[in-house]
Every structure is written in C-alpha cells, then in structure tokens.
Image 1 (cartoon, helix red, strand yellow):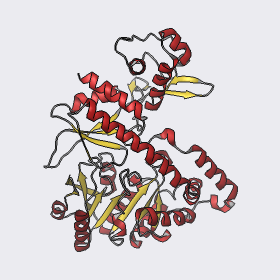
Image 2 (spheres, helix red, strand yellow; image 1 turned 90 degrees about the horizontal axis):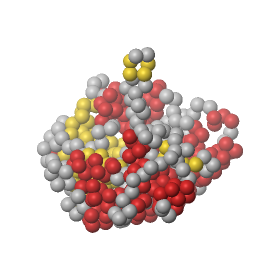
Image 3 (tube, helix red, strand yellow; image 1 turned 180 degrees about the horizontal axis):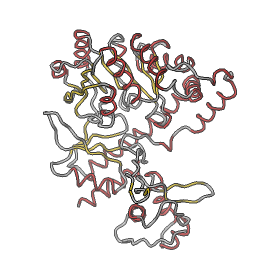
Image 4 (cartoon, helix red, strand yellow; image 1 turned 30 degrees about the vertical axis):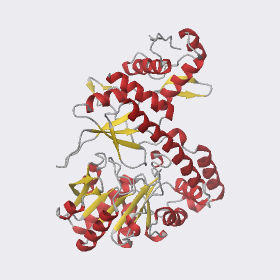
Length: 455
C-alpha cells in the first residue's frame, strides 16, 4: 500500500480539489504506478489531518475521471494509464498503444443500466430457442428490428419498418457501409460533403470506404446548403439534430433546402442522428429521414444512450440501399452479436430503454447547466454556443487562449478537445468541453480550478 506525501495549502481552501490534483499529478508523473493500492480514505484522512469526507470526495473525483478504480473488497487502486508506455521487442521500441476512451463526447459509463441489461440478458438466455444462437440475419435479428422500427417512428418520426432497418456495429460501420455500397454502385469514389467543423475521427473511415471529402461550412443554422449546392457532391453527411461540434440545429429553412437539393440532384443524405436522444429544452426535432425516406439514410446507435462498447447501431434506408448494406454485412462479418441484439430488443420492448433515457436526460441537463453557469461566473470571457442538448459544449475563446485553456481544463479533470476548422468562415478559437462524466458539484470545482490556474 502506498505511503502518500501530499503537499497541501490549507489557507487556500478547496482541500478535496488539492488532494485530487496532487494524486492526479503523481499518477501522471509515474510516482504512483498502475495497480498501486491507495490507503483507505479513513487512513489517508488521518495522516493528512483532514476529514474523511474530503478524501472520499477526492477519490470519487479521480474514479470518475478514470485515474483510479474502486472495487468492493479490493480497495482503491491506480487505474490503467490512459496511454501505455512503449514496449520493447528486442532492442526495437514499439509505438505506444493508443487510448480510445474518455472523449468529451463520452457518456457517463458509470450510469450504464447494469441491472436492467443483466435482466435483459437473463431473459434472452432463458427464452430464445437454440437455433437463435446460430448465425443470424446479417441485417439484424428480426426481434430487434421489429422493436426498433416502431420506437424510431415514435421518438424520431422516422419512416421505419423492419424491412428497411439494418443493424450495424455502431455509427462508424453504418456510415462506412453506405459509402462502400454507393461507391461500388458508381464504380468509382463518391464525392461526400461533410460539415466544417466536424469530428475528425470518422473522416479517415469514410475516405477508406470510398469517399472524396468536401468540407462545407456550418453557421448558426447548420450546414450552408447554398455552398453545398456548388460542390458537385453526390452524398452529404450531416448531424442535423445537434451539430458536432457547434451544437446548432439544422434550421427548418435549411432542412427544406437540403431535401430540395437531394431531390433535384439525385444525391443521398446521410443523417447522423447525433445526440437526438438528449434534447433538454424541448422535444427533439424529428429526423430528416421522415421527410424524404427515398433520399435520406438515418444512422443511429446506443453509443451515447447506453455505452459505445456495446457496438450496436442501426440504419434506416431506402430499400435498395438497405438491401445492399445487408448483403455487404454478410460479406464482411456475418452480422452483430445475436445475444446482445436480443437483449436490446427486450430493453426497448419492456420500456427499460425509455426509462433509462428519461433518467439520463434529467441528469445530463443538470450537469450541462452547472457547466454553463460555472463558466459564466468564473470564466466570463468564454462564450458558450449551441442549444441545450447533448453531452458537450461548444465554447469560443479569446484569441491566443486555446492552448492555455485546454491545458488548464485537462489538468483540472475536464475532458476537452480543441476545435479545428478548415473552412473560410472561421470563427474564434474554440473548445469542445464534455460534461457527461462528472457530477454537477465536481464540474463547478473543476471550472474554479481552471480559473485559478489561468489567473
């Protein structure tokens, strides 16, 4: 068990934050190695002359951030490092293993409905026939498609039927499969318009699937369709419900212009239903696919609503595209895990999925409001844009402050990414700040720490 020496400034206040900061830096520097067991909160509190509640709060903060892990009977230990050090094969160092978790858009994974999911798995194992455990339909087991179709009609106003719905292993695979199908049909690469700014993570996947990327600027109404019309794009990818990263909604005028453009040119619209589950100030706007089911492919997943690691998503597509994607899935990987598909079908059909979403909407709204209020109070030079929705904020900064604010925010335990924007209509420097993984009081304390670090 580690013997901890943590310098504290008792006159400065915020002792829990100081303890968390010192532990965080000790982990980052390697002084506390992966797997090191920390003293019990009561013991560390006695050693430091603090109340136990201060140490418990610090430990909980670092557990939420992923630096520590706490297990009943095993105590509190240093978690696996966000990125592993380079391994050595003979005399040749290998590249460090990449770290894929805890992005600003990550949901609160501690809120995953373990009991409801366990009950769903048990139900599946007790009820599905033996033959259901064989290779299933590569487009998804019928039970899940039969539950998702009415659900998407009800909550997203989608024109969804079990026949035009395909189950995929998440948003990335779904969008990539559509591009692959369209490129194979055309016999060449296809011109794909994407929002600018947008997530840089999915662009390489789309390019490898057969797309030549064309950036189209986003303003306060969403993608600028007038600019799109002059690109010669054959496919357009948008996040109309809550644009990533700016947080705007595609306006009614732009929605009509987009559908008119697709109908006039024969283009396909890929609708990434990003953050549609988490609109806090009103009911979410219905999906584009419901307006033009012959031209729009709706793509969704449970990555934000449940957990990214489930790797379950769906496409609602025109019949000819849905059929081609189903065949492509059969050629690539024979479909998604059958038991998990049945479990999701049970969760949706039993109402458990709706109940979980209602609970998380309430909690995420509290956390977003806490972040907005804390920024307004302690960092008023930062301007928040976008609607009350999703799992992240789009925050514009004064010129020259992006790097300093990013460093201070990460040191305080906030999950942030700088925004890159290639279009001509560039705005001020900006950050994407995630709020889903921290309770409201910790968000407030983190923003206070950022303000203190920036002076």
